[in-house]
Image (cartoon, rainbow, N blue to C red):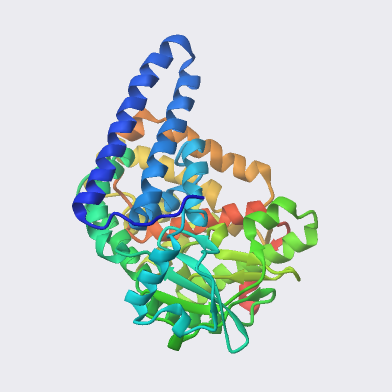
Length: 436
């Protein structure tokens, strides 16, 4: 994989890169109109999506930082974007071109005040893996194998300007209007700024690891504050393979079930007991050890769940709420899914839309045990997403609705459901966390 010897840092450099990408996308659309003449609409659209996904990702992987992080977020919801985008953007989870060795040393020295050789006994300047905000190196000190995460230069400083550039495209893609679109962007901006504060991440990592240490089949690395800084994190090197690698080779149903139960308990315990959650559940943040334990990593993206959101959110997940029209609508207004400014047509449309969606998505909460390997369950999710992504009626209405807290809560559940499905986890005890 080609290494990056420099990263566009200034606003002009980063804006120029996005403008160039926009020009490539424009050319792809011209080709698409020509392809429609000789191919079917479906074939032409598939080629357009593939070309756009390739060009957009190639640009974002050079920029790194918040644009790449947004792509990663979008890739987690497989029902929103076409497959070509999901497949390409998911590379942002743990397969991004790393910094060159010279830039690694320069970045480390600037961030920590010393070169790695002055701190660790051994330090591999070649990155073990690279993601959207930083990359990981292997080191040793006092007989311990360590993982050292180094943040890309300029990432924190460019977040606000990057999101300002991305905002018009995202608003157009999701038909967002009004003040709520600003609320959503500030929510994402604040979380991304938190993710670039590695001192905060170390504190959050230690807190969550301590709170969840008694969950069976779940382990965490130790974090070293004295070897960490605002752009550097040092933790134990954890031996294992990425969750996605494990699911590709695993043929032991019992292992899949045990790991699935650990993953589910981990999330339910956080959400219901701590009222905060590790809101970045993608395969790159979990390893599977040789003895089939789940290793949880990377606590930069933690979402605190306020009670005035938590309460109506989980009341809506109850089966009896879905059958009580008055209570259902009451909670929909509380969560700002239905708005007092809605027309009768909008009220009718969005009530029906979210009732169907919740009826599908909340199925695991209506039973004592659930089969997350169910093709039928995920087929319903996929069919729903595909149907409404093509809805002309939905595009005619203001899609900016729902509390800003939905962004990371929904992201959490989309990611969690996908990981549970990948594990083919069966017989999962939904409320097992209550006994932990």
